[in-house]
Image (cartoon, rainbow over all chains, first blue to last red; front, side, top):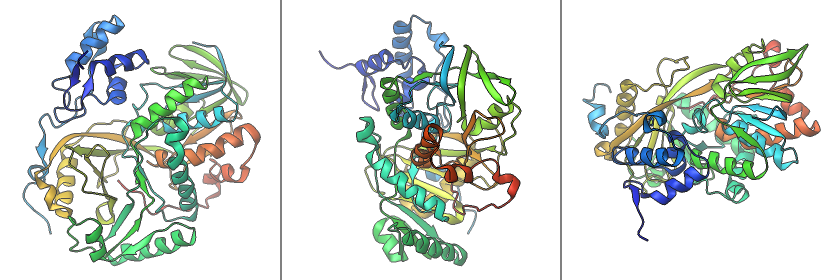
Length: 90
Length: 380
């Protein structure tokens, strides 16, 4: 059967998410750090809801009970030079 | 939840897990680890993963030489890829004073069998062609230093500990200790009580709070440090770079990201792990000045973690006034670096009474005596 990719940035499949849940990683934060989903370029914008749905289905909990991962700044990727701004010191 | 365990370890970070592993390896697996969050929720999930032998005291250099050896073998020992890459550490000096310290450290490190060498600016350029060496007087480089990925190290220990029969309870907070004279009889947690023969305080930056529960005062303070990662790039940066002047570190992870941090001008003593825009701006200025080619690279995310700081920059280990309460904290942001060798000795001290002198030298008692030796190179 074809692979179902949940996290497009980090190539994480549905199988890998389900396998991690079976191993006991049943909260969204450790699931993130065990599989690496949501740590790529989009920072979870495309995958978190799908992972939450899978986790809810497997644990019998509601998605809102599972919360979500801590949102990290910046919301959009920002180039280092934009953050650095004008050179203001020697 | 079980109602007794021979050893209860408070804290499921690198120190607690690695100690449990060392104990279990030596035949003692009647252990319960209590973690108030998820595994990797504290500093062990937030650190940069650097492992270096380039320190300024004989004690730390010797210890780290052993830790590098232990990390070289840990993946095969745990049966788990910990992404350890030995690209070296490159310390950069920009002032005469830093240069002097660098040369002193190189001499000491070499005397202790660490292969650190001095690099002239042109040699630095050869090692990392993108670096602008203007203003840099020299560097020290040790190839066997490296970086690992903290998350898989934690999962590797976790999986192995389960096989060894050690119990780990996450989302379980310690609320109180029941004392009988000078001993902890029972540990009261958010999921019930457990009686124990020995209790270990491996709660990292929260260790002083845990110790407070039985009236023990620790001198540790939690200090917030921030980090960020960029989008992944193809490999361009072999060593971890430390710019001493700014207390800046930057590395390229095995995933290709640039991971970097810089010390706060003010020491932020807090349990709060929030991130700041000021940090990102300050770091971006310094990083783009050192490697201008990175200016178009995107920052993906930032976060913060806590260093568990002690007055003399040394960990706190071993016995205290409460007989069966063992300290394993105060790791100064070096818990990952130092855990394997330290917990190996600590486990043999707990089980067989070995390494008495070593453990005693790190005990709380030293603060009463007032003979303190400090490590000069605390970075980030």
